[in-house]
Image 1 (spheres, rainbow, N blue to C red):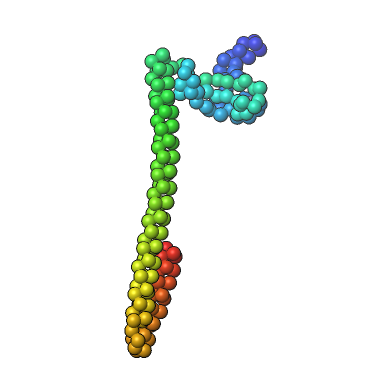
Image 2 (cartoon, rainbow, N blue to C red; image 1 turned 90 degrees about the vertical axis):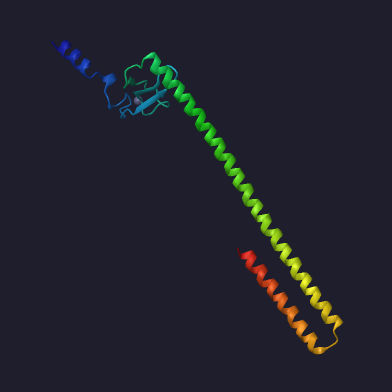
Length: 164
Ligand SMILES: [Zn+2]
């Protein structure tokens, strides 16, 4: 009598096969998915502390798949894994390209800045030349004013470009 009750209980809910129950460690057993060639995508309950414990609690949640379902699932799993790998590689390449573009923009800004400085220096030289050649105080004063103005303009321009 007792033994039949026990066997009935164990067939309804054997301790090894409780769904969402605890494993032998007394911890609730999580639902996992197997991704092996023999059981691709088949869910199971295992030990929450796997692989650090020696619990060995294991119970399939899904029925075994047909040979064809296993074959297709395994093929799709491998393709998916390969595509994810490729996406990761492309992302790294795009990131590297972006870094290069940022570097190119920086050097383009530097070249533009250098050209502007050269242009301003030329203008300043021209003004100095005119001051030298012109003996008139009035013109000299005007030219000195222009030279000072150019120096101020170049300083302000450099400051503005650097602050970008
Ligand atoms: Zn366990």
